[in-house]
View 1 (cartoon, rainbow, N blue to C red):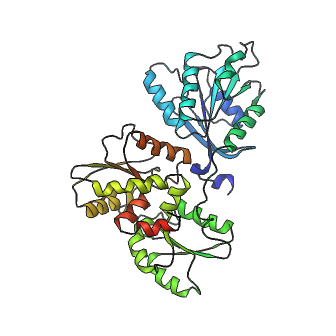
View 2 (cartoon, rainbow, N blue to C red):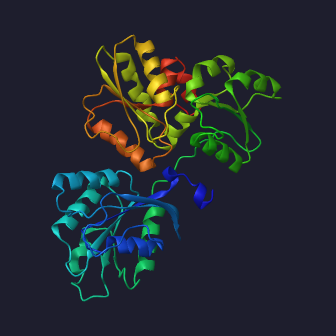
View 3 (cartoon, rainbow, N blue to C red):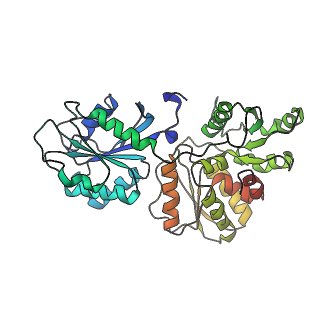
Length: 398
């Protein structure tokens, strides 16, 4: 994939943090080579995290996140820490920009503590190296990679980019989507419903990514609607290696595909890719224990325009009530609006997470686990409710 085609969830996420007037936004612009951030003599110009997808060599496609000054006046300390944690939940690499003249302050040390708490690899950019400043001295003992830079003079920027690239390249290797399941010359059938909830004129991201993964290894992807599936299978000289369906068509597709042909869904493959699969399979059992009045959170990572047949707000709630026979209170969240307090919920059902980084999906999973709340995902939940979960995860060795 080229830079423009790389989904944000697949890019290395780099967060820039620091106090007001540390030169953070100037350094972001120096690193990215473009005016991503507003730079002003007025302290605290950046008020909300600014995200920009771009390419930083030698790392490749990234998302750069410029955050508000951590010591922003009028913003309570707890709120600043909460916002920093929210951004860190998405970050593969953190950059702390320190005013070299002032040295490490209380806020800088708080941020270093948050990096360690979240286990986010970090670089400390000791800024304003063109001005007389206190020596870094023993500060580097706090861990991370320390680089002396000058945003205004441009010195040390190359070394900073190299340090970011090294840490970004070290992030956990991603699990393939499907290329380890279907080999060169083999056929995978992709079942893609085209209804009122499908985006006009295109297919959704997980479907694009699966198709590309197949092409990369020389496998063949046959795309059909569920209404043409039976004819497509009959027309193949031999059974396909795998059938992958949109979760909402799971029940219909399972009836059509012979038992001996492996079957799974895009959402289940995405759960494996993002590291959520085993937790999601354990969490789905909570559906059977739901009682009248229980609250269920259905969470989407994107903010797409809702259609009348939307899977998260219409179909899954309907299937949940149908499968449990319970009077449930169902709430939804979307985008980055994932609740801090999950304890009111008996279950969280999350989307495939194609628009979120692996770190953000894992962060949400750990967040739920820490509060003792079961979490699963769309594909696993639907397969469970339709009685085909065991079949849909068998191809993944579960």
